[in-house]
Amino acid sequence: MRRLTDETVMAVGRLTLAATELEYLLADIGAGHTGPDSHTGPGHQSDRNHQADGDSHAGRHDLAAIFTATGGPVPAARRRAQQAEPAHRAEFVGLVEAAATYLVQSRTAIRTLWLDGNRVDAATFDEIAGLLLRCRERLQALCDDLGQPAAAFPRPR
Image (tube, rainbow, N blue to C red; front, side):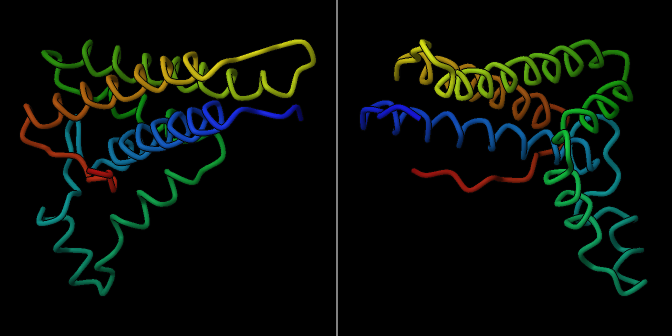
């Protein structure tokens, strides 16, 4: 790999964190904790049933399994988006598809660093990171509007 400037390394870090934060929200949606037709979030009847069965962390295990699955959380979020109420389905599907596109762009930009003759500067990484964060914020806002807040990902202040 070629030598990168400190600015580029920091931009790659910001991009990686933005992509991971978006993937975490997609996993949360895919696990059914937030987003369309969620029934398994903390405090819901199904969560209390898991507690009665001795599995108080079942929802967290589902989220972790989706978050770490090969292929990422996009397929699970796509399935959940299709289950949204008709009034919100197009918006959920559109945002999940936008997220999938931006995640591919982020991976492509980073992988380009390893290809001979290709240069990607810090501004490109920051531009894609901005797309990822804006998409995440729009998905979060939609979940909040539906009264189903998403799991919080640790965010620096």
